[in-house]
Image (tube, rainbow, N blue to C red; front, side, top):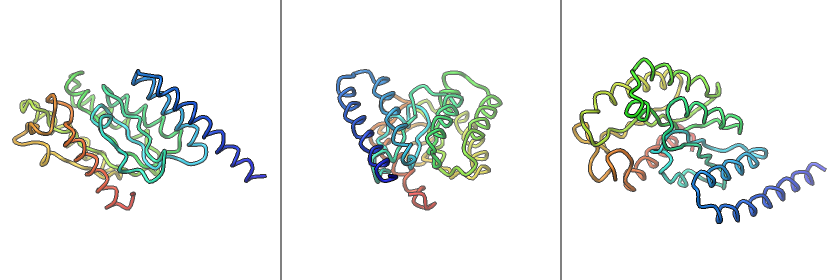
Length: 220
């Protein structure tokens, strides 16, 4: 009976996948596609949890995380353009509901550059973000990269130092790609398309660095 119930669940998920596939083809809005994708992950999570949850802002959202995947639905992508640290904390809560235990996290630039958040606010919001992680969570914090405007480098370095210390105290690994992405506090021209977001090359380096750190820590 248990096997029949499991087969029925698998059949239901496959049927749901076919329906969603047709809907995704018809849907041109990125927000609609994201909502469908997450809804499908919720269904699959009833049988097995995602291997990784990607939470963060547009930097993570524009990356292709398929190199982390061993099986379909291994990688739960909740990252979203414009997300602040508070928003990313909410993404973590959503990932917890699907039993995610390994996280790749980025964030902080939207708070700093667009919300002009003071360091004390970033400290408060990042601590709150970390509290939302499961007690047994593992994972990687990707530090905020420099942007084309080198004048922003001291502030970016300041929040990175803060987040690194808090993340390491929480038991997370930390990856800093500044040496590869930046020079003298400014993003290298080949590493950005608009001064803030990643070029295709930078996005590949970002994913590769995250994967290598996961491998080193026995999480991949």
